Length: 111
Image (cartoon, rainbow, N blue to C red; front, side):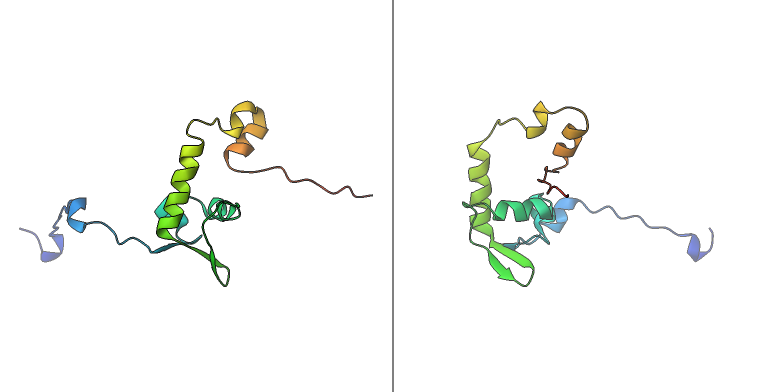
């Protein structure tokens, strides 16, 4: 048998043993990707809608209570369950840009 530093022990713990992670009472742009699967920019864009739940501002942080946000997302899903993505009608670079969430911005003419 080798020296003590040659010993290795492998322990496999099933994920179920850890239980459910605690859920947040509020969603923000800081935890939206982890908890909702929404990138921060998409989360903030949704909050700008007229039908968005009430937003609490704490500095640059935007907080939304858990249940109203989940209800809002369910309503959005029911409103357009099979809506084609805007990128479906585009081709080439415009399609790629639309798929990653880039939107055209009106440019001011210089001159």
